[in-house]
Amino acid sequence: IGDEYIFTLQEARHHFEYLLKNSTNLCFFGHTHRRAIYHHTIKGNFKDHTGKESLKLRKMDYYMINPGGVGQPRDYDSRSSFLFYDSDKNKIEMVRLEYDIEKCAQKVLDAGLDTRLAQRLFFGM
Image (cartoon, rainbow, N blue to C red):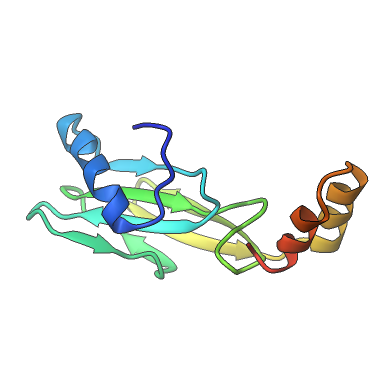
């Protein structure tokens, strides 16, 4: 769709035009390291389901979904974030997983990167 950061439903709204025009009901996106589930109904309503852990997708509706960040999540939850998409059941399941943050932070420091990049891993930001 483009190289833009999408953080809110308001920012996602105009991207749904592309999905509708191209008959694409489901779009997974990333880049922000933040979970998001945006929904455009067949009736033209917009909904934000970002806090949900699972969602049954309606076949005639449109969705833009960001699974979050496997590495460096930035939604103030330090756990890794990803999702499972079951195309047979038309359902998504969001997942959080603990990982060795200390080891990862040490690798950041060993690489000579800014200390802040290592520290923020502990806070999910």
